[in-house]
Length: 209
Image (tube, rainbow, N blue to C red):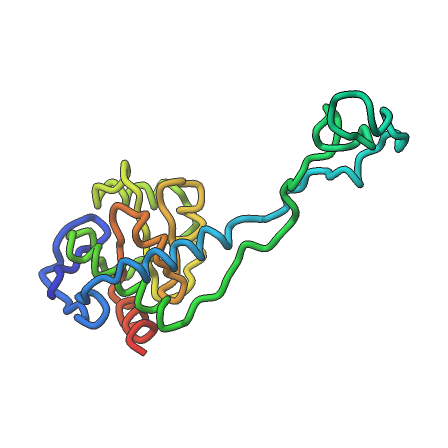
């Protein structure tokens, strides 16, 4: 699959690049995508939720009524979860939601996500670019030139670029990552995936193993 290379003003440079069929042209595996996205979202959870159980409630420990003869259920403590102000029964406890996935499955999921975006013509390849200084306006101008100022976008760079990253940091609908940092959720969550020329080689080497 060949894709035209644009410059940061949105104009066609007249050059085209070949997208690897092994990365951008495979049959998407929906279950691999599901598992990888599930893991990503699970890893975002802090898991610090906590509610007090009856052993942690401050209150009297006396038996609140006699065992028999009341016609109601037995009750030994006002801290029981059946009473107002008592502890919560089976409440949430701090836990770690993360889980592991096979590397090959994660690689398959990312290739599937890129293939879906490529098939839907949501991939844009642009020339490598840089800014003289971090400035949000410069990055907004690039978004407007590519008609992405009102859409979610993911920019994939070959290596860390501080000026470009800092220029995009205040924009909630745009994210800048390195080729080694792309993930299934980020690729599918974007309306357009913008890839720099030099990062294509990095993506291919990372996902073609």
